[in-house]
Length: 412
Image (cartoon, rainbow, N blue to C red; front, side):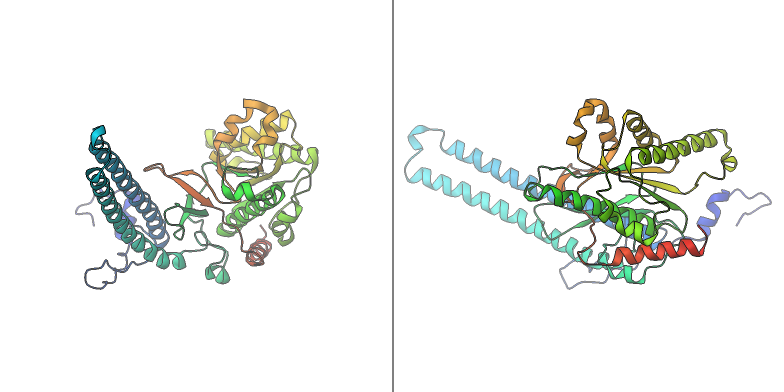
């Protein structure tokens, strides 16, 4: 409390200081000589959601660094063995015979010792991270959880927007069984590009192109459905462009549940109409923000966050529509209009380098596992696994039905 008649406390920090976050749960002691048992939510944060978010990112960083240390140790062991062999065999007169065989055996033995020591340390770190993942994964809220998590069976439409959303899993080849959730902060700062084309990954090269395109459509619906499910009623709106009508089966969970306010737009006229409406919204909101007159927006402007799903680009797009799409990708995220494209870049190659800025502005994800993402610490090539709904599961349709029912109940 203030000591005198003048309160020098910052008005926005006073409440926060008075309501300090409770301490994280203590770690349970482990057996003698072994690390403590991990606990879900033991990272810093003002809420359990923030603690879990920070804990997941801590696991991501730990896995990146321990893998980098292991790879560096193995590279050092290989380099040292080559140097020792080159030194021992530098003299042509000593390249054969018992001395040469002894030198080779000694170099390989030291290499094996270094490699085994590095692998043992790596396995120890992996065991600890795996144990942490086993306690963290079941504790994740719906926005962070997999579609097969039991938390979805108790799903209720939230009252607040979460701080992040899960867009898949990440892993490295040295440990195929350990996956780290890929959490992205909300609102999304970049649009998403679901690559429906053939990539260099083994899964893509062996997959049927039609199956890959179908999976790309299912991934778009799963991501859009998750975004709808984790936002409060009326705070998130999804639009869909399906110029050829080929994506109707994969869009069915969104269409049949009533989660879409309007049916997917088809044909060039439908594409032009939706793009014109969203472009107008971006222009009006930008002007309102610049002038400080956000309360003066026309009543037909939806204040909710907007997501536009674009299927089969560039089918149904003329030059004007492409220009509007690029505008939405550049200017939309800052005023709550986000883009998710399901496209094969090769099909748009006729535009040449004109669309290169568009592709670079979007976060690329794939419907099949692919190692195209790098971490910000050591730059590993991580294998991305998409957050697809398990085959035969009705969890997405059930959740979207609850979202649509809540929207009708509250008139939004």
